[in-house]
Structures are given as structure tokens and as C-alpha cells.
Length: 397
Image (tube, rainbow, N blue to C red; front, side, top):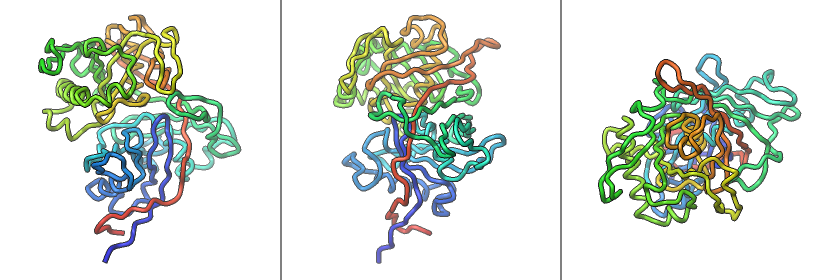
């Protein structure tokens, strides 16, 4: 006898250039309300993973790192915060849910979801204007502040704000990532703005790469594009259709993770694909985006291409954008040097789908660099709400 499918209240949302399944913690089956194997199994099945075909046809995932995500939101257990937000990056072809980091893009949707889900006191929602929601990002223990537009007491999702990588305009939503450095406050885990990463010569002929290793938003490895044999204006096809390139980037990511102290060995890096991110950078140049839009070098400060879950991202991860803005603000990092080497509190960078402007406030205090916050505008909206059906063998209700 086969058990019937579970039916669980869920909302499918786009946040920034990502989308995922959003759950209110108390709507999950009781065994999934706490971390563990049952929760992971449920989310994997809901998204349609693991799928050796890489399509997630039998689930809500879209076959890419940007669309294979889950979010759990609850009333906050942290003083001075409105909601707790937990993010799971669902591997596509492996039975893996990575809880090690945040998703900056879906962060933009958390405040709106919290209002939709009744997790915000109605007295704190203005009839119109902005509703400021203080979010505790439970994966990394950081505060995010979302300024959600409100119209007639409801979340305003429609508008004229355009975000490269998203086809249709929507309402602009500002988010602030507070104190986005590592928990111990160390922006640069090695203490250096630029390190030399020793690598096997079959990966890079010179046996070494100049890298900036930074932990702001999400741990990120920045490498000059030219040292990898790239221009820096490549689109997804140039990287994702090159299996040798993907193997190289994954190997470099693992070595960088060890250098940053995030992993003890390469084997561990294989089990945590979400962090660190790896990106290659170049000075501004004219290029054509994946949609055919022309971007002039004068319109950007730096070119950045980043990989997520083993593939080149179609735009830019929100957390990586925080890392880019922070690194750009600090003189001497590879990102800062590629963007002209000047002091700045915001940067506009080119990515495969267009451009993005992100601000960061960095200061040199007590002999080290500190970042107080990073800011960016995104958009978010509900795509579907109702119940998701999950056939989870031996499930408990």
C-alpha cells in the first residue's frame, strides 16, 4: 500500500534573480520543524532532487542553482527582530541540502513573505509607504533589514523598477545587509588583501594565482580573469558548456576554501558546494549581455562573473554582490584594482545579464578593515501560493 502525498502550505516566490519555495515553519510537518534528515528529505523531494537528468522535472526546482532553493521563515527568537529566516540550497543531482550560507537574492523576498504569511504585527504595517522588517538570517547569524513597499495596507509587488536578469519590472525593494563580515569580524581570513594561491600546474600553468579571499555577504574567492585565460566578459555558455573549465573552477574553489579555513580538505569542499563562491574579474569593457543588450565600459566600474553550485550564474548572487561591493570599497583588493583603484562607497559591475549597483560602507579601524553594511535594491513577488504535494516514502504526519 502506497501512502498518499503530503500536502503542505507553501509559497513560490521570486526574489531578485532567484526563485524558491517559501514555508512558514509551523506549516511544515512536525518532523520537519526541526533540522535533520527528515527535513532535508522533504525539501529534496519538493524540489525534485536528486535528479541525474539535471532537470528536476518531478519537483518545483528549475534545474539551476538559481531556482533550486528553499526558505523557512518563523517569528523571530532573536531580540529586536521580526522574523527568523533559514535558507537551504538544494543540490540538483545529489541528495544534498546545503545550509552553510545565505541567499542574498531570496533575502529580498523574505520581508514580503513574512507579511503575506501573517508573521508581522498588523499594527506595524503602514497603510502606504515602506514597512521596515528586521530579519535574522539564521544560517550565518546576521541581520538583514528589508524596506518593503506597501500600498493600501498590502505588499506592493508591481512597479517600474527594472532588474537586469529579470524580464519584467516590479516594485523596488531596498535591503541592507548589516555587519556582513564573518562572525569574528575578519573580512580577510588570511589577513591579506591579496594572497598567492598555490595550485597544480595542470590547472594553471604557472602553479599560482593571485586571489582576494573575502568573507562579506558570503565567503568569496576573486581571481583576475586574465590569469585564467579569460577576458572577463564571458557569458554562461562559454563556461557552462566547457566541462574542463567547470572541473577547474571547482578544484580552485576547493583549494581556496582550504586557504580560507572554511574546509579542512577537498573532500569536505565537495559536501558544501554553496560556500565559498568563486568569481573572476576584469576592468570595464564593452560587452553584449545574454539578452542582447549592449553595455558600454563607461557604464560600469568592473566586470564580474561568479559561479554558484558549480555553474556560472546567469546574473549575480545577492550575497556575492555584497562581497563585490565590499572588496571594491577597500583599496588594494583585486576587485578594487580592477575597478580603478580608487576609494568608493558603491560599485556598478557588469554581469552576464547586465549591471548591478551595490553600496558598501567600509572603514579601517583598529588595524583592520571593517564593513558596517551593504545596500542594494532588488524586487520580489509571489508567483504562486497554495499547497505543494510531496510523495515522501515512509512519511510521518
